[in-house]
Amino acid sequence: MTTPRTSARGALTAMYGGAVLTVGATLAAFLDRAGLADHVRAGYPEFGQSQVDEAVTVYTVVLSIVGGLGLIGWLGTIWAARTGRRWAPWLAGVLFVGAVCFALAALTVRDTSGDVGLAPRLAWLQVLPCLAGLVAVVLLWRRPR
Image (cartoon, rainbow, N blue to C red; front, side, top):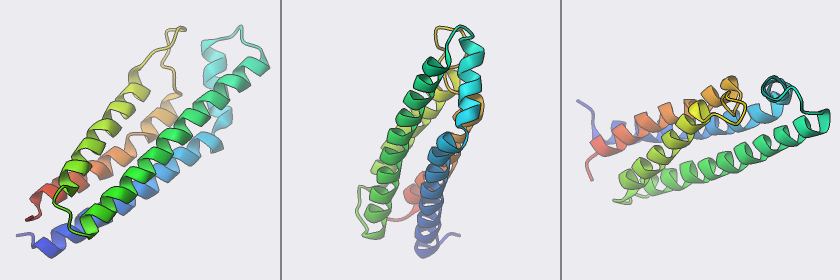
């Protein structure tokens, strides 16, 4: 049986892990700019280098903003859980649903070329923080309030 202390510690560990995964997924967009450029070039062979660079910049900015918002969400939920806020499980649940929607969109939304818009490797990285979020949500809801 899970004690309240163990459940809370596990939820916090999952949330800290999710924050680290979010930072990693965000940094991956900067570290794999060449892979993102190759993906854009494959979908739009008529694009010149400046257009490919522009598309890569847009993707990087969008992923940075989403990653920043995700990190704020993790830190806010960690704070709420650590301070015993009764609404922490609700916050975690809402943020989890939003993150899953974004990750699914990153994986499935097709652009005008007919290919998925975001390079699959980067899209799958958006799923990793969701796994930590699922664990955190389950543990937060199991914890007595």
